[in-house]
Length: 81
Image (tube, rainbow, N blue to C red):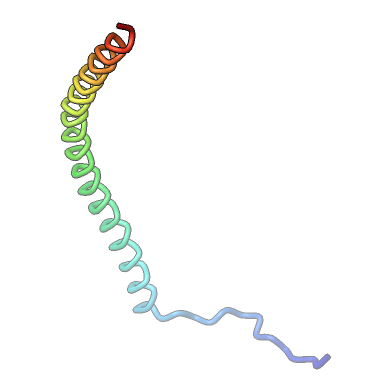
């Protein structure tokens, strides 16, 4: 093993670099909040539309099931004769 001395004191970072880092961090957080808010509003609208469509789709499925059941009952009656 070689005895290499490591520099124990930290390197000073330029105030311009610190400002840039903090600026980008704060900009990223603000952008994330704005983007999340926008996507949340869009998702609420989509869910409302899907809820309306679900009611219509459920009614159609119930009607189709009723028609299929009636057709099956008629077919069974014919077999019983």
